[in-house]
Structure formats: C-alpha cells, structure tokens
Length: 130
Image 1: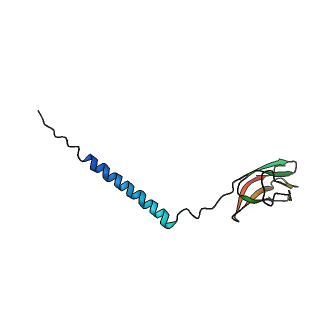
Image 2: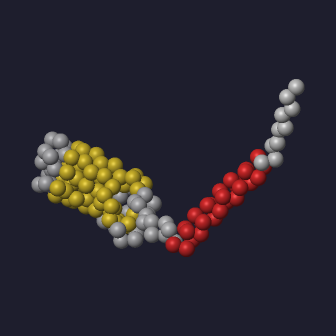
C-alpha cells in the first residue's frame, strides 16, 4: 500500500501573508487619501427640480423643489422675451415661477441655477414648438 504523507501546514501561512498584504494596501490607500486630501475640492451640484410647461406662445418655468440654489434665471435663445415672476431671480423656493413669452418655433428656453457657492449650472431646457 502506498503511504502518502499529507502536509497541510503551508495553507495557514499563505492565507496569513495574503491578509497582511491586503491590510497593508488598504492602509496605504487610506494614508494617500489623508495626506493628499483627495476629494476635498468636489463642488456641489444644483439640487433642484424645475418644470417647464408650454402654453400658447410661452413657456412657464415652475420650481418644484429647491435644496441649495440661491437663484434661478430663465434665458431665451431666439426671438422671445422673459417676463420674470417676483421670486424667480432671488432666493427661490418651491412655487417660484417665470414665463418666457412671444416665442417663435425653434426658440430654446433654458433654466440656469446660481448656486450658493457662486457657480452656475444649467438645470433644464426646452425647445418651443409652435
């Protein structure tokens, strides 16, 4: 009969070395993030919901939800004009609105958010189809 000597003593040290290497890599990654301050310059994005509704020759913008936008502006690319509602350009909360009227086919109405940090961001736009 064949006598096979089975030696499993090397399995435990190999697993231990793998775990030590994994812990070392994780610690180096954490130290890199802390030392180089990675991720601190991430800017906020607009956290707001604005609905654009077409009616006749106009498009109305209504603020549905606003978390961090200081003001909204309505811009028209084309022949239309903007008749701004009372609250639309300043500290706008939910319910603020503005209307772009006298629009021609192909005019684009864009809602731009001015963030509290001073940055601007386009929220939504709609092309007028007459």
